Amino acid sequence: MNLNIALLAGDGIGPEIIEQAVKVTNAVCERRGHTPIYKEGITGAAAIDKVGEPYPEETHKICMESDAVLFGAIGDPKFDNNPKAKVRPEQGLLAMRKKLGLYANIRPVSTFPSLLHKSPLRPELIENADFVAIRELTGGIYFGRPQGRSEDGNTAYDSSVYTKEEIERICKLGFEYAQKRRKKLTVVDKANVLATSRLWRETAQGMEKDYPDIEVEYMFVDNAAMQLIQWPKRFDVIVTENMFGDILTDEASVITGSLGLLPSASIGLHTSVFEPIHGSYPQAAGKNIANPIATILSAALMFENAFNLKEEAEIIRDAVKKSLEADAVTEDINKEKSLTTSEVGDWLVNYIRQNY
Ligand code: IPM
Ligand code: MN
Image 1 (cartoon, rainbow, N blue to C red):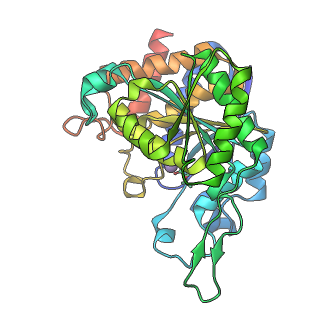
Image 2: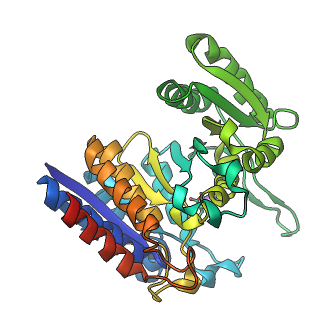
Image 3: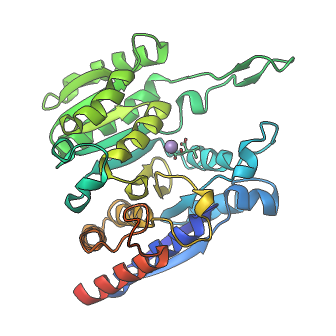
């Protein structure tokens, strides 16, 4: 099968981690008789430097014409401490999500037995923790208008906006994921304070009757933040709005042991995007030290979700599991004895060639 994949490496460690994901994708394709066809697009600070905007039309076209997008990371510190910067690299990521209609960001969180001791949380609390966070991705405070500053510059405002339709389509996905899993859905909101959250809750409650097999609970986000690390095993599927999902999933990475391990799939109206949940880690850019696993596991999600190639996804997951067991890991996981980014990629490629 031909796999048309758009590669958007982006900024910071993006190019290095994408390179490893491509190596692993190629190895899987080689063993299983697929032909990957890559098209590269520029995005983020790299694109601002070249053409003045972080998600150029040409890149959007490449994404639209592909079957999947493999995305590295976006962000550059030269924009961070400059509140006056007119365009920011992150706007490229947001524009891509909006223009591709990627309303759902799926972030599976589970532990690796060989890494239990890496988490600051006690092993017995996290062993076998396994849940999926579904984050709404094209609404809420990230996109609501009005947003900006007063004329004198001394007042700033953002707006959180959600329509019933937006809430319904993401909650539907939440219910469906729960049906495929342990049949428990946690709707996270702040309905004691926010009007949007009250609409979320009302909407989800209205859908319950269509999913009688699902046990639904409603939880305030502050409480969810606490329970997530206190007793992560209680969660099966979490569905929540854009910013709550952003924050809770970074927090959830503590359960796995490193932010460098968590993949994600963004799905919606057009081409799906597969990207690590971490950022561009500028301090590590070009040093060949970043952990490529989150991106490689995102490639596994790509095989499964974009191409319906489940066994191929399992090959990648097996290889990653074996590499962690063999302690073939980057320095975020083992400071004393670590491999470089590209060595981890090589390890996985060799494993796949030898075992499949
Ligand atoms: C993420 C990132 C982005 C977000 C940033 C880079 C805009 O943190 O994908 O979680 O906030 O959505
Ligand atoms: Mn984030």
